[in-house]
Every structure is written in structure tokens, then in C-alpha cells.
Length: 292
Image 1 (tube, rainbow, N blue to C red):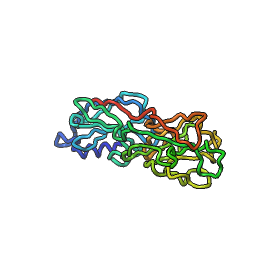
Image 2: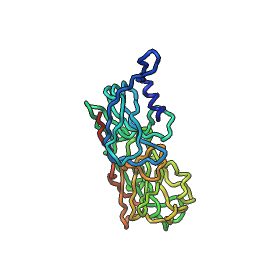
Image 3: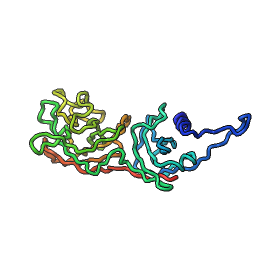
Image 4: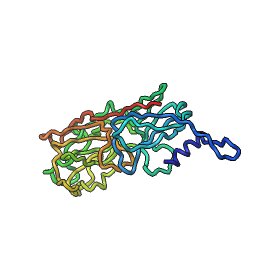
């Protein structure tokens, strides 16, 4: 990260310069404090960190990284000249060991400065205010009709013909959707996807699905075999919670990220092979303030 900040400083021409003929002394870059007050961020694990950036003359300048999301506000020292000239703030997710001095595509928060502060939000990921969804409980990847409660597929068959079950906005670069079944309090992924009208990324490689095919061409999962430790498949998804989250990509976390636009607590007597409507999830946007 020292390399990243050094290159960013070089690009904007802010370097210590010699102030004597023998180069024995150099002037120091004057710094000012940038304070972040953010809520709701999730831990990223050992492989990734959050990194702040101020936009100066259209170019990003790193303000530093952090991984602790439990303690705010956080204060960083930034070149006074650059900070005064900054027009916006952006928060990204970066590899912990990152040789690239530029911000990654996975940007979480952004906002323009107005005077000494910027109100930041996650709208650059997507606007989930009109998100809606439906799914069915069924297990189309095997030939057994006695375990239909062990699969969830994000399609809508209310009309008698299966159609796309999720109405979700296109995500910005660096993000994917992921489905989850919360079984006995533990989230198990149904797979990641970017287009709800197509099968998810692990449709052909899922270890959980049956042996009779990959299922319909929509996101979803059959929990039929190779259960993780502590679970038994087939299972019963009635009485569980089904969630659609928004995940950083790449992502090394086995838990859902904080952005969860859709959620449904499945009734214990929910009908099988019948469309179930989802509701708004617990977190559709993130917000915060940045002060200089």
C-alpha cells in the first residue's frame, strides 16, 4: 500500500523537494485530517481491505486502508493541498497485498464534497428501491418427487409458465448477486449470478444438486447430497429464510455481505412448486459521512 500511495502522490506532483544545495533537508508535505463516519460495513477477511480515495482533478488519491469495521469515526492524514482540492470521496474494496496503485472496480460508497463534508452512499453499486422477487421450492435436479422441499429456485411459475423470478437492477463492475438459504441459522449459498434470467455460476458444478441435470435456467439450488458438516441433505427449506445478497467480486467470505435487497421467511406450511413472493431485505443501501 506504501507503493500505491507513493504512485498516487507522484501522479499529482506532490513530492518532498530539496530546500538546500546539499539536499540535507527536505520540506514536509503539510497534511490535514480526513474523518470517516460509516456504519454497516462488514468485515472482509484476511484477503481484502477497505481503501478510501479522494478525487483530485479527476484522479483518485489514496487516503489509506482499514479492516476494522467496528470502530468509527476513523481519521487519516492527507495532503492539505489535495484534500482542499478534492471534489469527491470513494470507498473501494482492495486486495490486502495489492500491487495495483489504482482503485479496484469494487467500489462500495461514494459522494461529492459540499464544503467540508461529503454524504456518501452505496448507490454506485445499484439502486435496489424497486427490487422484487419470487421463488419456488422444488428439486428439479433429481428424479425423486418426495424431497421437493429441499430446493429453492428463483423463478416465478404463477402464470403456469416459468419466468424470471427476480427483478433486480444491473450491478456495477466488481459485484455479483448471491442466493442464500439460512438453515438452522447458518447461511448456505445457492450460487452467484449477474443475470437473474440465466442459470447461476455453479449450475453445472454444484456439489449439492442431484444427478439428473443442472435444473432450470435460473439461479437456484437443490440441497440433495454432499451436505456440509453439521447438516443433512435432503433438507427442508420450509421454516428457513431465503435471501438475495450483493457480494464483492472477487470475494473470499463464506457469509453474505451486508447488502441484502431481498428476503423471505418461508412458512412452515409453504406450498411446494408454487411461487412464493419475496419482500425487501434488511439492508438495501449503505450511508455515511466524510469530513475534511
